Length: 326
Image (cartoon, rainbow, N blue to C red):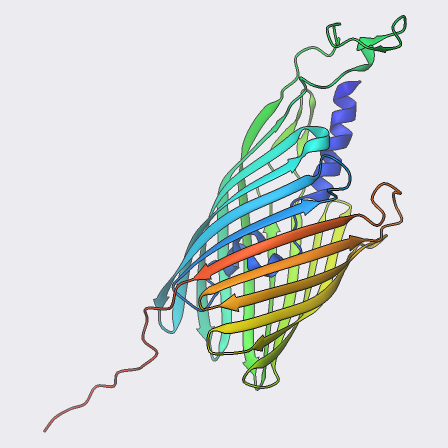
């Protein structure tokens, strides 16, 4: 019986999957093709998300990544690594991912076409030591007896598998507007995971994203963006708009708002704020839940922070032309 319950939990967790409100700050978790897609030489990023802290214990996601760009003008390569930790504490379920990404960008008449692949290991575990089972209910005591035989046999509490992902991306500058979009397919190799005999293939996860940067003035930009994810029967849709203002040569501010939902439910409204100083960028966001699916989640919040550091590019923007001497 417990195996069946865990199987349902597993499906729930896959449907939830790891997601960020500030998804655009983490190239490697969004799309392998975006590895090295930034202005600079090396980029390091840390993201932390706490969801529904009012329902103890909260769900938490933490990740750190580093990526480097290798210029071979007019094209470029990118290489990066990301470590992800996700905790669904109410189910005692922890997920750890270590992934390596590589990308290639082709400049075709000003259209930047990107291709990327990603692979690594996913490790998941569930702790059943502090859980009770139906067979441990003591009718005389009117309570669970954790010392009683659970009759569940031997459960597989830890498992790991190889994960393969890939993606493509595109961007182009049309006057004052830079348009970009991409598609990524996760779990290409359909790895197997599960508890005991309740094992099944991890479904594909499709990720589409698009954005535009409208340079209103040299110091003010508007950035509308869209994200759509689909895994099995679960969907996640996020749209929003950010405004970026350069205050001084070294200081910039960001503010934005957005909405998250699915094909069947409205999930949350989003508020975003950020500051850029020199090569550092800090962002914070709040998701205010307005879902009607559960009274337990309604009006609950999720908050998220991101910190990025980007080193300046060591490549020269100047082009040297040969000059013959006579």
